[in-house]
Every structure is written in structure tokens, then in C-alpha cells.
Length: 114
Length: 118
Image 1 (cartoon, chains in turn red, purple):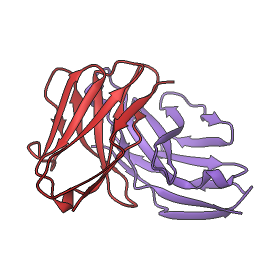
Image 2 (cartoon, rainbow over the protein chains, first blue to last red; image 1 turned 90 degrees about the vertical axis):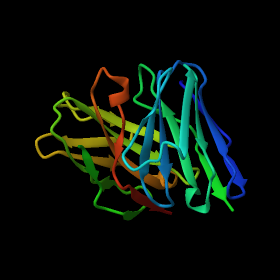
Image 3 (cartoon, rainbow over the protein chains, first blue to last red; image 1 turned 60 degrees about the horizontal axis):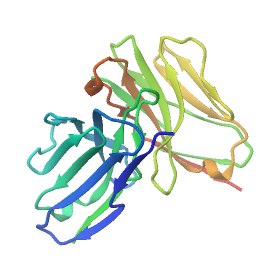
């Protein structure tokens, strides 16, 4: 079945650094990918919709300059958390849609900012 | 805008029992999908079952079935013969049916933490 690979699975870094998270569709092409944020014991909150070859569409309240999204190919979208601070610590999950299932999810990235 | 509500933050049942998780939603759309996702402690999101709104027949997947009441905007999940591996967070989700890929975003409920006890 369709697989979405998300990397890294866990990252710990110092405050002020930028962190890049990759989301790859391994066996299908995804013109649209989605990025979610999940706080502990909470639901998934959609951050943005990543569109191949064009700008991402951000949800209300999400800072586009803080969370940079690039979708340069049909199989790869990246989320860069710029100048990360402790409040950016969270679990980030990407997903991609193929022609069969609504969304295939990556395994998530646990981001910890010290 | 669509909203999804799961009114049961936590539930707990004994192994082999049947459990029903509730979900209600609000939308003005007529064509849409509804889903139940499972998120075990590994935090991987696993699709449990899906329902197309235009289909009257309730979806079933082995031990999992739904009770879809379109007029009442209700979409409950029934787990029969529950197993220890069913312990997880369960999320109900809504998605508009659209040819526009960017419009095909999932709206999630708050989740229900289900624990199956031995």
C-alpha cells in the first residue's frame, strides 16, 4: 500500500536554530500534502496545505514565516521551523493523498526545543 | 466551517466487550466523507473505517462498524469483541468531497482515549 515517510522521527535542538522536517510519498505522487501539529493528548491541528509547485495555504493563526513549507516535487514536501523556541516543541505529522485513500500519514516527528 | 465533536474524552472496557464511540459533526455540505482513525501509543495514524455520505449502508471492517445517521449528523464507531491491541486514541474526522485537492483537508474531533482492560 501507499507509504509516506517522515524524517526525522525525533529531533532535539537548541533554541534559535532552524529545523527541517521531510515528508516523502514513497510509491505514489502527491500533488497535495498536509502538515499537522499535535499537542500532548490533543487532536491534530491542520497547519497548512502544501501544493506542489506553488505556495502553501496556511490555516488561520499559523505564522507562515515561522513555518516554511516547500513542495518542490511530487514526492517531497518539507516543513522548516525557523528560529525555533521552546513553545514550538510539539509532534508534527504530515500526510499525503493518493487516488484511493483520503490521506496517508507519516509516522510523525517529535520536536523538542531546549 | 465544519466541526467535529467527540463528547467522550475517555472510555474503558473489558477485553471481548463491545464498545461504541460517539461522534457528531456539523456541516452544510451534502457530499462528504467521514472517517475513524486510530492512534496507538506509537502515534502512528491508522485508518480504521470510512463512510461516504451518499451511501446509506453503514460501513463495516471486520470487528469495526459504524452507525451513520446523516440527518442527525452522527457517526458512531462500534468495536465488537474488543482486544488489548485496540487500546488507542480514536479520532473521528470529516472531509468534503471535492475535486479540488486543496479542499480535501481533514477536520478532526478532539479524540477519545480508549483503554481495553485484560
